[in-house]
Length: 308
Ligand code: ATP
Ligand code: MN
Image (cartoon, rainbow, N blue to C red):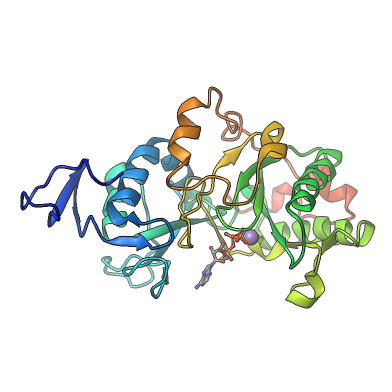
């Protein structure tokens, strides 16, 4: 992958920097994942190739990033604030391909986002169900678990979208109207997860802690707390193999082999042959939780109480 680039600073086999789009990438040949030999340039090129698809998932939301200056085996730094802003607490924003590549040049490997947009910071517009396999849980259990979560949500009148996490698990995402505070959404997702764990206790567990999870699927409802973030669609993961989080159609679920089914190396080929965006209807879907909350026995604040 990295052998056809054009040297910028020196003509030898180890150029000091390589241009990718608007960015000058330093240390292009630095291996960031020894398990595959993938380099910093491979990762920057990956982000260049998916920038158009990825940006809608980053724009308008607070971004948290995982930097790995020495690659996936070195120390990793989780950052949620813009180090260059005057205000130390200023959230990170990524709104262009240039900004995305600039971050990758600064050794950012992963990009995460919050559930609320800046415009409506106290009213998230999505709920995330993070499905993690406990020790000994087979991948087929994860596939079945994701289907069950989808079915439960469908029974509640909600459409859900699926993505690989790029790591061990799957993320089920429910886009909603930006109408309820994070506390309500956390209570809502807790009710969904508690119900699943109560009715299907051999498959799901709502309690954290590795012991509780053996052979089961843990669903982390805390992903819906006000400060929580989740890895963005198309982000790479700072783990051996450089898996990537990729949106998938529910019909594709049986063909998946793991949460890292696609990687920085293989995602390009997959995306090139994919004819229909499996998340085509996701963006415009602002679902109401009113009926679902009522079905779960939750009392949501009425709409009129919103300050917006
Ligand atoms: P997997 O499928 O392997 O579980 P995942 O993305 O679902 O992958 P993690 O990689 O464990 O799960 O991510 C943990 C979550 O916590 C992420 O959503 C991330 O936004 C957040 N996170 C990760 N590191 C930190 C940190 N140092 N501080 C605060 N939040 C973090
Ligand atoms: Mn997870």
